[in-house]
Figure 1 (cartoon, helix red, strand yellow):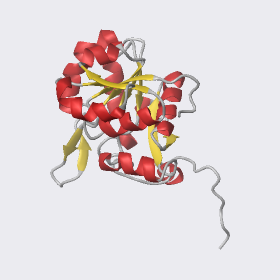
Figure 2 (tube, one colour):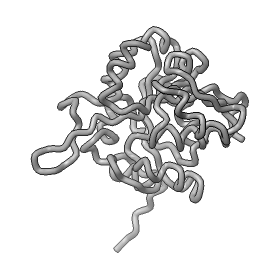
Figure 3 (cartoon, one colour):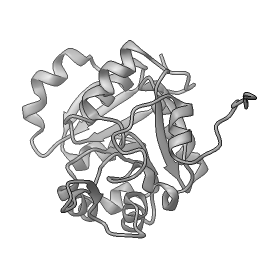
Figure 4 (cartoon, one colour):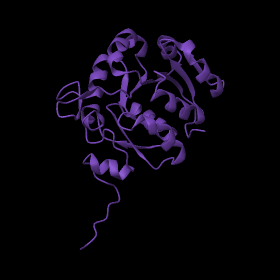
Length: 225
């Protein structure tokens, strides 16, 4: 059961490689999860064993039923989805776990948004009435379930938000997924978790994430040579 006094109602938009394991983590922690999909009927076999706190429906109905929304659709579909749901997302905490992945000519991951724009600021601009946070974007999706269950609260997860309340909710859900939140700062400071950033694809302890992101590592003791 979650440490949260009142379980959260969460919409997971996109029940793929990110949304599915996170939804399962949150159900195990005692939350209520509605999986939003273009074709919710196709999720029947996935939903059935998850219990009565899980259901599948359309994107719009999932948002209406929830206070917290996880964006985990493929990035090419995100802009159109936000255009359609912006009014319904007003007043809600929105955790963006999408990645604008591109590949440079020399074979390196890069953000398709260009310099000076993070995915977090891109989403916040489209959702001016929502509280936007970033999380679950740099961690390899195939490890979200195994690392969160087999080694709970060992691995770090980078987070960012401009809103303290949204950051608190995000950190709760990172914890309830089995990870340790590492706050990187505001959305404009979250380039480290975007494609090509210092933490993208990086798996480490909380101290390792802080060091890789250039943040102070709490508790570090210098050893004399």
